[in-house]
Image (cartoon, rainbow, N blue to C red; front, side):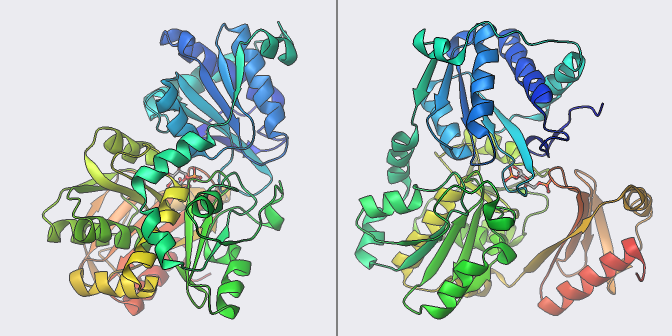
Length: 476
Ligand code: G16
């Protein structure tokens, strides 16, 4: 049987193939063993799930295993976004949390994200321990139920919780809802049938702004695509913005509410890298909150340029918000971001938060009275333009081999630009002349290889991506 393997964020697999009841139980037992080893059983574990198939059922199974291990749990009363769970860990001073979610992956996947007591996604030293314990247990344990779920509830070994209001109150410290309400901006929200339903619209309505919401019910098939807020999955929101001129902004969140997607007036999708740049610039320039930035090694260097302009440090991390979460938790940065639509800010959860990111954009657009594109232009004027993109290629065993081999011999130039340096923190990043770069890496959440590029013009970006693709695949 395949080994259980934790990827960039948690353990994920196709339902019925990788993600089976036996393997779920084994992972939960390994997490219970981890908490016992750390002496954290008394603090209790939060158990949540997303809107996928049988989420609440898996949660109850987890509660039973935890209770058999003498661990109290707090089970969420409905599907819950990962950042909300992160806040609840900190608020309750719990031992951590598990969320049954495969995040942005397509509907055939499910998974488990584990966040320890510091509230961020577990770091590799933690997931390695859990992973190896789970693999030791695989095929070795039989799970005998000690108590039924109902009995566990009755005996108060589990508490049913709704963490939404406390999280919403926390958001109120971070977002200028008064300014948003005063602008009476018309926005459209797409929670993509996921866990963030009833968060952005609820808080905006509480503050006096009526919004249009689509895909506002649970659908474990996510309308037939992945709950990943990228341009090709936001077609309906894009057409609303194209047709309804009064709508000035569209905001979306992914399956577990930790990623954001932003569509400008007229239906123009704005890539996450540019959103990170306008938010960081706004925090420094308009809010006067000075501080560094944390970004993954695949994320735009626009953030570095902005930081340089304001004399602030840049922290570069491998891909995975766990590393950025750590910088947030240690108070080292004002903003942490990833090109895959991950963001959190100072004093907020050490986990990426799509709800917060979306609301920050609503605040900026309301307060500045500009379109998102105009806000991007403003940043470009200050620090110079940078255009970025990412291409995904489905992996086969043959491509995987070829990819590894190719990366052993990097050419001297790509698209006519000289290679200046390379780093191998996570995949291979190649620094080129004129502030351009390329990154080749294998995804830790999907069966794809990713090629990322950034350049000072759109033409150079396309040339770079073409030459990078040719380098790996030849002329096919
Ligand atoms: C996860 C991680 C992110 C990471 C993204 C892409 O996002 O939490 O930190 O940037 O995957 O990772 P990869 O390129 O390895 O697939 P999510 O929203 O799926 O949890």
